[in-house]
Image (cartoon, rainbow, N blue to C red; front, side, top):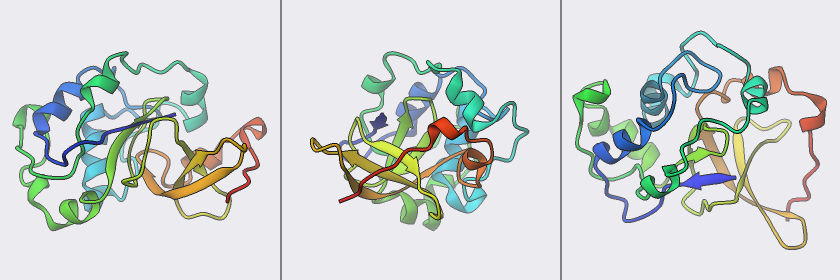
Length: 185
């Protein structure tokens, strides 16, 4: 399940800061804070979504710990997109000028910030909806968004960038029972 952030494409960083405070650190699979994961997610030039911190557990260990520490009211608080006019907040510990960078604007202008059911942060396509599925397709270079249709088949919605699973972390320790077949139309 996805928790997309969609609205008028203008938001203050303070709205995201409020949302991030609801999560219990550390970010899944790392020893980083959610604020650090957020910054790395939206500033692709800084990390290419590779976790810098030591891993406290594997991606699949984090999934097994469900339900995640996702606050009940996170969905209501995340009602804006990450693209648009940001105001910086030093209390969040973000790098000065991050929201003024060309890279930030380029990669986020048509992407939606989301939080997965397991508490992973990511940037998804503009058509992202609650209930969409993030998956790793064998042979794919990144994670992808699929939407389940009434027929049980799936519609390909686009690629997404999910912090903490972009460097093969999820595939390294994936249990066999997590492999699924999808019919994509």
